[in-house]
Image (cartoon, rainbow, N blue to C red; front, side, top):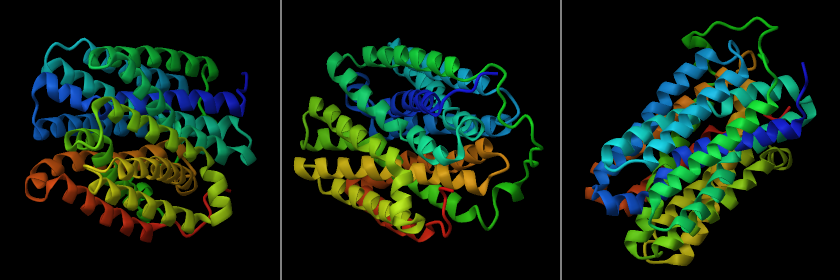
Length: 383
């Protein structure tokens, strides 16, 4: 069986994560102002659709957690890629809210299948000294996806359905490349005994801070990804085209996550995690003040993009250490908990926004994320 290079694994993982997260999942937030305009949907309805996407992601996470390490990696990648392409195509072909909702729900499943197979692939095919860099690069794929999705959305203008179809085409290419890179029949865990899947394996003293932090980061990030562009455009800080350029900025900043391994080496795990938690908190706080202040919006986008993806990269590396027996399943567990936070955020925002306004929602999320720094790992996660 051929052994793919670290660069090939990283590029395939970046493509899959980029389309699954940066397009299939977060493309909805990118196109939200145009969807609101064409379908006349309320903030509550838009939040419910976003929450539905995260609910389908949770269902996918349960499935991939059970399958990771037991079926071929290519099967997982194909399932995720097919869900992403089908969901984005449905959204692009929608003539009313019903088909849009169906597309968003189906596309949401794809993100659950993006990281786990490549975590297994990195463990199986990448030399130990290059694994941290490879995993960090793969987890930063969201930034690459957003950085590509936003210009595509700008090119099509208000024709947001065409943007979804363009995203689907990118998904076809990314999935094909990933299937080419991963060896046929490759099952990273096939030659070792797998630990049983029981609650005590997922939730234990070592995993507690990791899982709690993932849930809080997901909760705060869901508000940003879902409502930031709509908030800035509605408030007047940005015109609609500039709103999409804003996400280009966020996506480019997100690519900083590629260097998460080096950051941990320089600062240490605890300080790197705490610093990025505080940076994410500042990004949300700045967003709360940015409704009529473009400069604050730019600063918020830069901080959020960099901090979010570095945090996700650190949590990915951390999960491999905590769940060493089944790294793919461990990453799926972390993504499930993060997905629970992502689900709760949009659902809670709608009723709370009536009382506190979106500014208050973002400020509350900033406080919560600042407290996430207390959950920093106590041990190195790069070895």
